Length: 211
Image 1 (tube, rainbow, N blue to C red):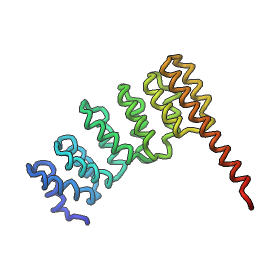
Image 2: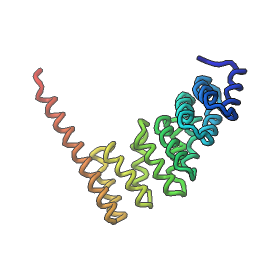
Image 3: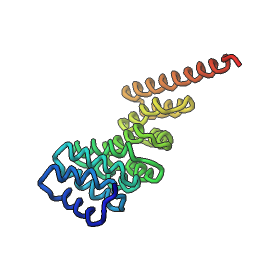
Image 4: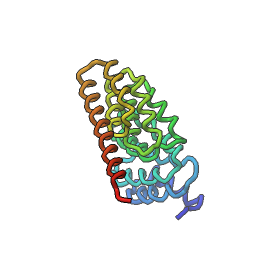
């Protein structure tokens, strides 16, 4: 149920400064239904300072109701936080909210100077349902100079990729020539091969079905 403007600002105040956990929880649960611009920013700030797990979960639930573009814009910087809890929460939220309108933010994160941020961005793409994830993961494998980031992307290509991605995997393996890359690349190629064989079996079964 939507709230009035007066109620909205009252909820914001409660979320920001109430010492009562129940009041903060109520505010966190209700703010997501407002739908006004700026709500995601308020919720993200509250998420960073909130200590009660149940209130943090409510804030996350409200963020999932907010505009995806705004949520991604506000949450993405948390991937750079020194606080592991903030990074974990950001990963979870971004995985649910990334879409075409917000893809540019992920593309920027994939070029961040911090390797750990790039790895987290790869995990967001690999775990999300965003339709453009595979193409972005391929770009990472093509250009990434850090073996940890490249291997993270390769693992998701093994899960999401196509048999036609095998030359890309081989190229990455040759570029790094490292035991860890050798292990990941071999695993990825095996997954792609298994996927191709599974598709062939399904195709044969379809052709052999009685008319």
